[in-house]
Length: 251
Image (cartoon, rainbow, N blue to C red; front, side, top):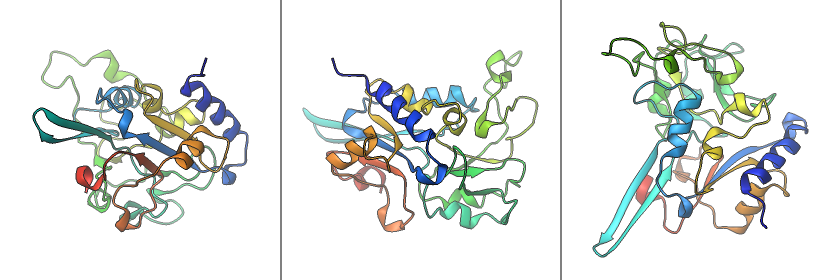
């Protein structure tokens, strides 16, 4: 019997975390051919990070083509690309050693683009700078707005970037820029990103692509890979496998 991909990736993750941070290269691969458009990754992410209304770290775009009865629909999940040359970081005015956003170089978050909510001034300059529309300013709205009382799930703590936060009541990250971070708080505990864990079609792969024995490295090597908006030169760490050119869906 073939081992479930999640178990294989969990083993890959454990092996990667045993290496020095500078020897790891976190990456994500999404096989669009397997995505059924269930949005379980989107919902799982929203639940894990206690996201407010209309703020999504991992939206799924849909593209329909053809004429009846030969109609096809493609689903394209889009997390943060964790670019090696992130234009969002370049656009942020709060720079330097204590900047608001940067490309991390240590710990479980090594190689990821992260945000320090305490330093973010909410200027939103990073939002239009991202060519993937992966950043959003938290407007401070709640799912229970206009109802008799807040719900317990809104008061529950989230652990983004490994810090316990309770957003309800007007605290961080309200007013700050927010985005996908590959669930770095889960990585720190040896767990896969929530979107990978909740994918019913096993369309998502995650791990250390510098490890040739990792599942993501093997899948990447065995398939023709695409990246979004390649001419932008951002060096994304999210790869796609698809039957069609993704520029048609997400040009």
